[in-house]
Image (cartoon, rainbow, N blue to C red):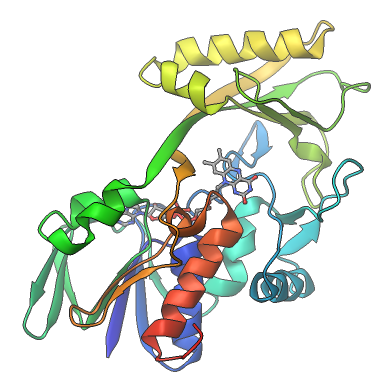
Length: 315
Ligand SMILES: Cc1cc2nc3c(=O)[nH]c(=O)nc-3n(C[C@H](O)[C@H](O)[C@H](O)COP(=O)(O)OP(=O)(O)OC[C@H]3O[C@@H](n4cnc5c(N)ncnc54)[C@H](O)[C@@H]3O)c2cc1C
């Protein structure tokens, strides 16, 4: 029995790992070139930036066990904090590195965008339109992608329409920048409720990042990002750089600045169940949108869906 998992983010890979460890045949498809989805790291001449999830915390034993193992294999480390009781974990050498232990040895096909799904008597047909168009068949399908994108792919499947429609996401504009000076007095992390500068972190203060030019990641809050969602990247870059300068409070020379728009960044209204699984259709859904806006929620969703598919009583 072959399972196709669409999405190589934390949810999809947690599901794939557990199925594969139980001896199941699994193929993972992702439209991106890298792995990790919103656990994302951009590398270039200007530096290394975690432009998606910033750090993760663990409250459930299964996720803590995963992080402990990831630390042993060099894929995770602790970001020392003084202002928070919870341990802040980060992927190494970047946030996307956190999924490396889950992905090891799996059949993962990158740059494979799924454009349609069709159920037929003996299973599923999956249309892929990248890198070249083609079809893949499978006995079971798992969608581990944001709810609105799952809704589009499952347009013909009325059963999941209502739960998927109930999920609400907020967008996020993210600025990645390097500065010539070390902002010595500034804290490594700044947080506020919204505005252009809702989160600001000195990326170079995380363990395992290259030293050198100081790299910062700034994230606008949900309301600010919504208001400026369709503005062009150049205008948003300018606004966010101005906000960074205001925050710094001292003259700074910005050497490099780039923005990334996350349309589905943060889950504002979650489903409230760990996953969806239709045994008759051999169709499963997982993602952070099931439980909440955190990497841990994505892991638990994928992990528990796999447990249910394997017939475990407590997934
Ligand atoms: C800016 C930002 C900051 C965040 N900060 C934090 C934080 O500090 N701590 C925290 O815990 N969480 C944070 N989060 C949330 C966290 O990143 C997510 O909850 C988690 O990574 C979601 O994982 P996922 O597997 O559910 O989805 P995703 O990571 O979105 O993975 C889905 C994957 O599916 C692929 N895909 C989508 N459609 C298709 C298709 N048609 N065909 C093939 N592949 C497809 C995508 O390429 C992607 O790789 C942040 C998110 C953002 C955007």
